[in-house]
Each structure stands twice: as C-alpha cells, then as structure tokens.
Image (cartoon, rainbow, N blue to C red):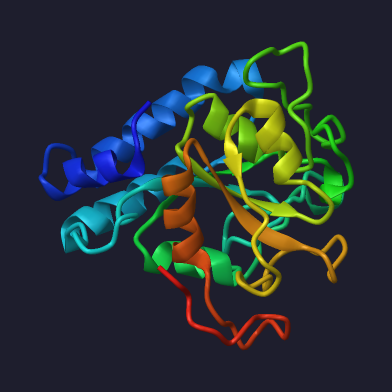
Amino acid sequence: MTTIKALHDKLVNKEISAVELAKATLKDIKDREGKVDSFITITEDEALAQAAAIDERGIDASNPVSGIPIAVKDNISTKGILTTAASKMLYNYEPIFDATSVEKLYANDMIIVGKTNMDEFAMGGSTENSAFKPTKNAWDETKVPGGSSGGSATAVAANQVLLSLGSDTGGSIRQPASFNGVVGLKPTYGRISRFGLIAFGSSLDQIGPFSQNVEDNALLLNAVSGYDPKDSTSSKVAVPD
C-alpha cells in the first residue's frame, strides 16, 4: 500500500509524471471496476488533459496533494461532467458550475478521475439504491459496501484510487468506511463548504474525505477545507495544519 507522500515525492523527483500517474490510476479503475462497480462516470479525457496541464506547469513541491488523482461522489457538482446523484432524474445533468470543494481540488492541482456511485439522492445505507447499478463490497462482492457513499469507499478500498470525496448526513461516510476497512471522516460542521452539494438534509449534510490511512485523510481534509461566502454555514476560521 503506497501513500500520498510517497506518490508526491515521485512526482516532485520526476520519477513519474502526472500523466503517467493518471494513466496508471485510470487503468486500475477499469481493471477493478467489474468487481466493485464503484463509478458512475470515468472522466478519462478530462483527467488526462488536466494531468498534462499540471506537468506543463510543474508539480508544486510545497503542496502534498499536487498531481494526485481523486474520485468524487456523484452528488457533488462538477462543471461539464455528469452529476447524477445516482438518479435517472438527473441522468444527463451536466452542471454549469463546480462545487467549492471541487474548485479547491482543482486549485490544489488534484486530478478528478471519475464520479462515484451512491444511493439515489444519498437516501440509503447500502449503495443498492442507485438507479444505475449496485456497488459491491471491496472485500466480498456478496456483501454490501454500506452507503450512501459506497462508491467512494470501495474505490479506495479496491485500490482504484487513494483518495475520494463523499458526503455524510447520517453516517454516509462513516458507515461505508467501516464496511470497507478504509478511513472516512465526517468533518466538523462548517469546515468544508457544502456549496454545490446536492442536498439531502441540509442541516446535517457534510462533504468529507476517504483514504487508506489517517495521514492521507488529513492531507485531503486540509486541501478542501476553508471559509466560503457561498455557504452560510461555513466557518470563518483558519484551517489548522
């Protein structure tokens, strides 16, 4: 099991390029997708274009997530990329704006490789209630992965990606993290902007990170945290390191 720090060191030292890392990640996604069904949309063209632009600019040695691929739950708005919330009501919906959390991913030179499966409109606890397909547990495909962020959890557990974003209203990050043996965090209310999250219970909804270890979870949490004037519940406090 590798870590974000180890991958970032390789990027900084030019042992691997952002494009090469993105291609390897996309291959892992495709090779393992038939087993777990973590993804609704795989954004290969967008990811490779983004990775090429990062290589052109150069990896930011001071930013530990620069050049790192990530998957995003399909209820988080991504401009020009399908955002279905696992519902046929939104099967062809391409937002005209990015969620603030997604803007922060891009600002940190993270590479979005796809949108993950979930219970429809986040209303479920097994990721069997997607309008498109059920997601399977990464360790035992006869078992459920939990939900509603089951796709984000299994993508990390199945080594398709090292990092993903999910959302949690009543356990939708914490439960699938537990079911799949990965690290999932529902952050303190107001730490991460909810702007661009398709709401389920807006007084409880929070966006949060999945990872394979606690340190990587903290790196992603820091990358997407911070005050946002577009979210009235966002906390106007400094983000601790």
